[in-house]
Amino acid sequence: MLTSERKTFILERLRRDGRVVAKDTAHELGLSEDTLRRDLRELAAEGLLQRVHGGALPASPATVTIADRWAVAPSSKAAVALAAARLVRPGQVVIIDGGTTAVQMARLLPRDLAATVVTHSPSVAVELAEHDRIDVEIIGGRLFKHSMVAMGAAAAEYMAGLHADIFFLGVTGIHPEMGLTTGNAEEAVIKRMLSRQAAETVVLASREKLGAASSFRVLPLTAVDALVVEPDIPAELLEPYRKRGLAILPETEGGG
Image 1: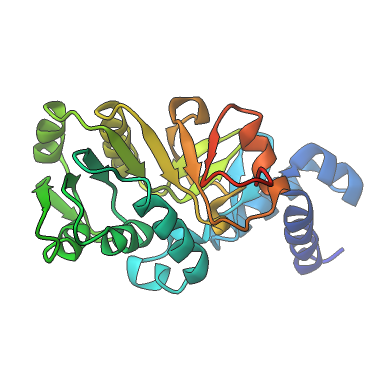
Image 2 (image 1 turned 30 degrees about the vertical axis):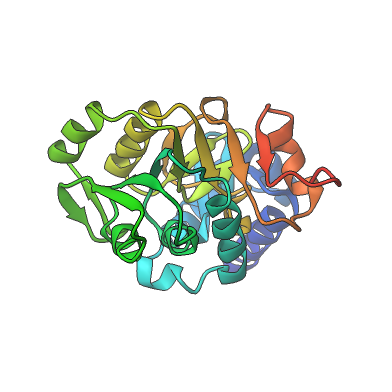
């Protein structure tokens, strides 16, 4: 089997099963594990999968630049943003993460809502400029241009004194076993810090992120409270997360 044929087989198996086990796939193709792992390395370098111990998982499409991310699953992100905005209650102190879904969520908050929003995303803050009754606290620091968020020591220092009701967390991968992941190590640290400063953490879970993984773990699923998903997402996609004790929001009569 040619290299290109092997890689096509690997990607098709990944789409079908949601993971590739290196040992089993090598045996099925009559290859050495070293050859199969080389194929996985090359596919990972092209951004087509995420290597993990023992094999590979689907790579998140959300690791591209923020400008390109606006074109990824726009309808799913819009539905998640609307569902998340409806969770905010008057008087709450809310942390909103960076990213395209978070920006849309801020845009959809009611104009008459009285609350405090804390964010390390200048883009989120700008969306709230016309919300007269929302107090906006901006976390400063070095601008990480890939995600348009502030990071570094100054951001961490501010977060240490923060106490919020709820944190709306954005990630690039949500996987039943790998947990919540993102594409940058420092950004993963900042997200963990923000989660620790909130009484509740909910994840902005647009459909393309479910079952996908990125290089750096943010949190295990057990460390968050809920996933906010689009209302019509198939129940079978959500069942692995329900089994791990996560609430799925918004709640529906059909359970998914």
